[in-house]
Image 1 (cartoon, one colour):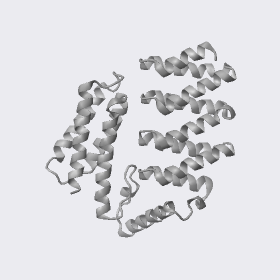
Image 2 (cartoon, rainbow, N blue to C red):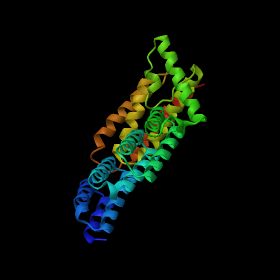
Image 3 (tube, rainbow, N blue to C red):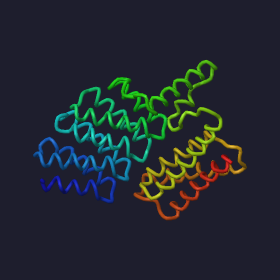
Image 4 (tube, rainbow, N blue to C red):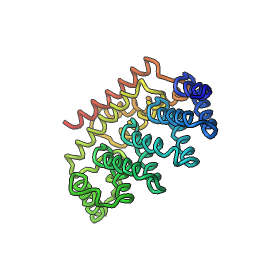
Length: 293
């Protein structure tokens, strides 16, 4: 491997300074057109690793953009790396926004044309997301992609088809009653089929989002901020009959404001802020667990 590529690869992956990492990512992209095959593979491997695994949201975004730009210039040489990377992101990324974006990217790639073997990989990814994702919007995007790209018969007669039928019935019922169907298509909520199921879903989502925030306290501050924003939006939009609700809402809103201050200035949260993140997340968990009793 070219020493220059290795130098920038190590900086892109390991530098403690965000500006240094971003500059290295850009340099690797500039080196790609003139590099030998081994160097190109190393650059693509670096971008794929950052896009999937970096704890820094800006680095992940920049690496994904470079992969897509290189694909536009050299689809034959880059297609396998791009497709496999976005397939893994669609199923493994911590943030729902990134998983949804990956599904959309894969759908576009399949429409514009990829080799048959990669088309099969996209199909398998969509099937897994459609069957196993806990988020309604992700399942819908995967199902829409399957229907558009491979035909409706991919659903068969199993659980995925049953869920599809349930969604249609719910939509028809809402329309006939004159009610809005916005709640059915909510990006982060399974569509409720009854009051009891709705309450159970609310508890599940409240606890789940709180756990995601708690787990993100040691991630990059911008990632923790995004989790806190998701949780704050949920709590604000999902009030419960509990005397502690207003205090918990104030706490999670205040946490978002505090994280906004440090998100762009630090590579990690200090111990005191991590403790506060955990305390607020735990308070949200207890709030929604109480509401389900």
